[in-house]
Length: 222
Image (cartoon, rainbow, N blue to C red; front, side, top):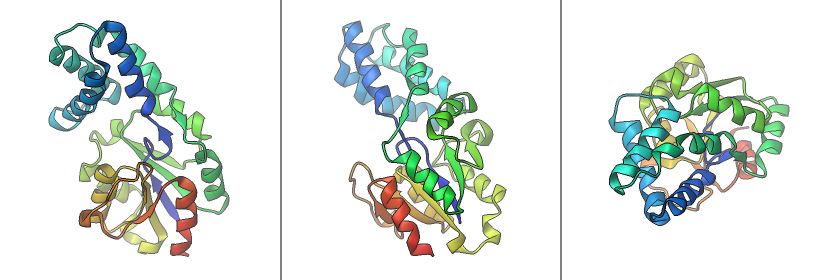
């Protein structure tokens, strides 16, 4: 079976970045809570409302917006620190073992991530490099949930020529992955780590709460 995965939030824990931004804010004498709440807003603005740029530049511009919004000069100068934090992301505890099991079972693993090669190289080492190929934003020149990202992967993997049961997309991001995958009628497993509530837009997914659950859920396609 072909298994496509989201990376951040699904396999890799991204929470250290917001924690780092909170620390930068505290050191700079501005509100950590406000900075941590605003950063994802500006990150999304750069990714989806401005011309494409690689993810490290997205982080830089989001930090510049923080300086603008919070009337300070605290964040932009710490862009390298933020990127270094990203490079040091770690996998969730069960992930490496489960990816190894999936691969040993004969599944073909592919990654679909809003990242770039230089950053992903660090995370692939952390994950044990289990993937046949990684579809990244610096190749597609767009960010999920843009449907072009999904169409690009579908074309490269010839998913239209395969039976539906031969492929499943596994992801934590409901807005970024589960909903757009439904437009392509992909099988989906929602790794709902934060116990959010889904809706009808993403209907048809199997809901689990970690990658161990996803591994067990694959039995539904046997």
